[in-house]
Image: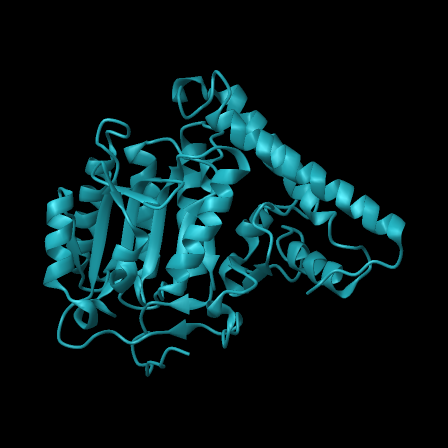
Length: 381
């Protein structure tokens, strides 16, 4: 819904608040990247006190984002109702996954998923199944966020997941271990107890760029479409033409075109650029990948520590929800489960780490990879 102003003074105040949000957000990004004791270069300096400061800054930015919505307007009242439903004392309290919300925006410099209705409410990403789309994205067309959309599986073969190591090995030493573990988790889903069983899945975890290229030739254009339903990339993306890195070498995003069609895409990493430029590059990259046919991308607003335990908890919770053999979740619902699991883990060890709030979905949150048992599948719009 567009925002209109009745007078120039209100528009000036709105613009000032917008500028304040962007400035604070950029300062927060730089605290991870560029400061002498940045948390990316020196993760051991991300102490409990500094984690609490980041939490406070996320809350402050979230409240400022809410103030961008003009008061006493239909849009403001709609958000108020949504935040009221998360109030513990509310009679209309609902589970977060009960409501799908898509924010369609032409401005990715604002972390909309951090919106906070008041000092006591959770973040917006905690109270609804939330996704963000660019205004011009083709994925907007024909998608109703209140209805879950499902897509057909390629017959004859089990669906596959592709895990790509986007590092040199030395820069993020745990990535190889993380994606190998996730590959095993996906493959072993069929062996889990019935109640928590996942859909039968195969996983490809190439060990080097040559193995990835072999895979690219093994599954030509038509064969790979609808076969690869998960593409999990962990590492760096770059400014310039190469865009991605794989096993220490440049990887053009175009090489993923056929793999990502009809797939869920995880970009678990960070840009080699700094400040808002990094986020601008993420916007361009996700726009391109969605244009290739990806159903949605989970990305990180701020870089997360290369922690194999936290990664295992977050992604296994998300994939367990997304690939459940029955009552499988939408993309937005699965992301909520991942956030909840990671937040609960940090709380259980007495950590204030805010990394659970860094993940967001670029795409429509109401999409499902598979139909539920007993439901007929629907064609892709």
